[in-house]
Amino acid sequence: MGRLRSKLRAYYSGPGAMDRLRIEVPLGAYVPAFTNAGSVAYAGVAAAVTQPAVESQRIAVLPIVNMSADEENQYFCDGLTEELINHLAQIRHLRVVARTSSFQFRGAARDIREVGRLLDVSKVLEGSVRKSGNRIRATVQLINVADGCHLWSERYESDLSDIFAIHENISRAVQRSLQRDILGDPPGSVATKRPLGIDAYSEYLQGRFQWKKRTEAGLRTALDHFTRAAQMDPTFARAVSGVADCYLMLGMSAAEPPDTCMPRAAEAARQALQLDELSAETHASLAAVRNCFEWDFAAAEQGYRRAIELDPSYATAFHWLGLWLHAVRGRSAEAVGSLEQAVELDPLSPPIIADLGLAHAFGESFDAAAMYFRRALSVDPTFHRPYWFLGLASAWNGNFEAAEDALKRGLDLCPGAAFRSRLLGALGFAYGRWGRKALADDVKRELEKMRETAYVPSFELAQIETGLGNYAGAVACLEHAVVHRDTYAIFLKSWNTFAPLRQLPRFRALLAQIGLD
Image (cartoon, rainbow, N blue to C red):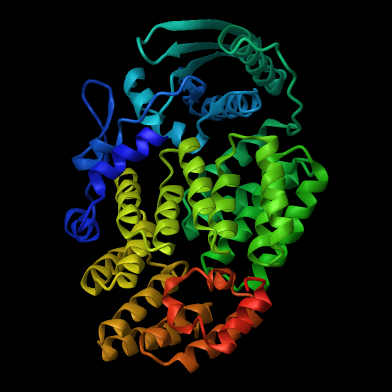
């Protein structure tokens, strides 16, 4: 990761990087492109990003290919991929790239050496499944990235009477082979709790896919899938944990009032942990609730670290630990370190990459922030978050024209209420600091109009008041936000918008109330 970071900085850092980002990242640019030769590349300057160092103990599991005409067989393939990732992630000394990044290659022609460079791995596991009647045949092979040669290959055949037994048998065989032949470790056992039926598992997989989109529509669709999975199998802890994660993100996005969705997140997270105390997902879900809503930072840190102990390849635990715990407490080095580990595990996840940029912006390392915003946009130019954070960082750095440009681009990608109020708060702040009071007032009125039909956090109104220089009004809005447990209240210490308020007694009292003094 160190060499990857140095390459990124060499391309994107340096004086004026924030200005160049505004000019060189038009909406729709840097779309992931699959070349005619079958290799994966990125259009535009993103090619400079895709030269990571290869590490000897990192592996990616590519989506298992469905070779059958039956499209419904795709969920069997996705389930097998998920099980392989889960089993391999528990092997000592092995780091497994997250599902989010490896699934970027589903349906694409694959040049294994290019995939290895993109995902920063030395070995790739791939396979295919063919179904005939009630019989299934799976082929799995381990490939060395450096030369494209097969290191190991195996074929499995079975009927579909127990789909999970097939997943389990294949996953354990691959695990044993890697431990023995690649790492030189004795084969170990993996204790996992699995759902009782394929339908519940399929619902879970669809839910996790939708949740990763981080859009309001995606979160609500994911919630439906997770809820159905939990209804089909009330003992399926990861499905219940998924319900918690959806309510958590609906609260963080301002799609729903926190006092409505966060207690539901807490209830589901505690239920999931009771069902399975050996699941990294359940520990991370409850830690996030304790972090963002209950403000119990000590318990949150303990939960995140337990999740990482259980699954060192679970990128989400590193992600949330870095952003929601270390960054909000002003621990910049720890925040960047945790988020860098999350990016290493999930190198093609736009939310994690963008949040690493935000962590740098908190510390006013704006050129480093620009580097990661650009990288996030290279993966997904339609994702609003990099534009939002770029706009904020530009405003914090005094580049208001760039802030306006980025935030308007982000707003074009946020048609619904969720996240939109967040971007409008940043835009109103930028206008106020820019001296364009009339435009700031216009944005403020738009937020107040939105409040008639949707939830609008007082945190965002506080940003506009701060930009306008109305510090007493800003603190009053933040006091309302703290009383109502606005999920972004945890950012009061690190959110540079509020730098002018930091010495005010009322503001410091809010920090003490949250536990950030």
